[in-house]
Length: 316
Image (cartoon, rainbow, N blue to C red):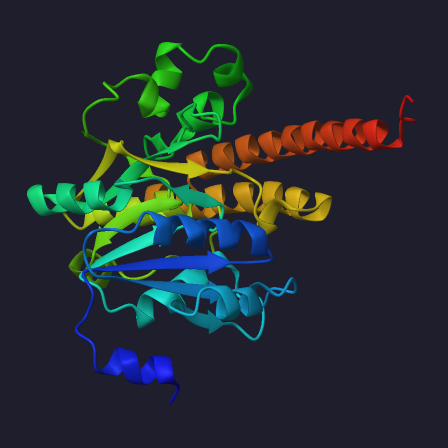
C-alpha cells in the first residue's frame, strides 16, 4: 500500500471527484491540472488521472509535478470509455466530474455546477459552457442525435455556411437559448460535466465501444432513467478542441472519422432502431456511408494542403 493509499483510506470521502482520462497529451494535461489547483472548487475534492498507456511520459509528469493527484496507469491502451470508467470506479466523491485533458478550468466553474445540482433536484447531470481560447462559444450542447443531425449538426457544411437557420438552431442549442440562464439539453459534452453519484450508479458506466457519441449515449441513458440533463452557461471551461493525443497525427485524425461514423451507427442501433431488417436501417447505413466518404475526402484535402504548406520553401 502506498503513502497515498494510506492517506485516502483514512480520509472522509470528498464532495467532488474529478476524473481525467489521458493519452499522449502531457503538456495539455499539465495545463489542465494546473488550472484545477489554481482555481479549485471550494468543497473537498480529489483528482484522478487515468493514463491510457501514454508514451510521452505523461504518467511520470503527474507523479513529479502533481503528487496530490491520484494516478492510475493502464498497461495497454484501453481508449477513453474504459479509462474513464476505471477512474469513476475508484472515485469516492458524492459528485463525479468528467474533464478532458485539453481543458483549462476557469474560476468558479466547478462551484457553479455543484451549486446548480444542489438546487435542482431533477438534474442528474450538468455541463459547463465550453469556450475556445479566444472566448468564443463551442457547440457543446446539442439535441440528441437523429437523422436531422447529419444535415444540420455541428460538423455539417450547411451549419458552417448558414449557422442561424432554424434547423441548425434546433440541433446546436447554444444558438437558440438565452446564454445567461441554465436550460435543459439533449446532451452536453463530456469534456466538462458533473454527474450525481446516484445517477452514475443507476445508469452504469460509459459505453466502452464508443469514442464519439459517448456523451450523447450517456446523456440519453440519464434521460431514459428519469433524470434531466442541463447546460450551465455561467460555468466556463476553455476547451482546446482537437489538440489532445487523440488528434495529434494524421493517422489519428482519419481514425477519428471512422470512429465518429461507427459511433453514430452504434448509437442509432442501440437507441432508435434495433431491427436490422427495418427499412430505416438501410436508409441510415446508406446515409452514414455517404457522409463517411465525403468526410474522408474533405479530410484528405486538408491533409494534402497542410503537407503542401510544410513543403513550401520559406521566404528569407
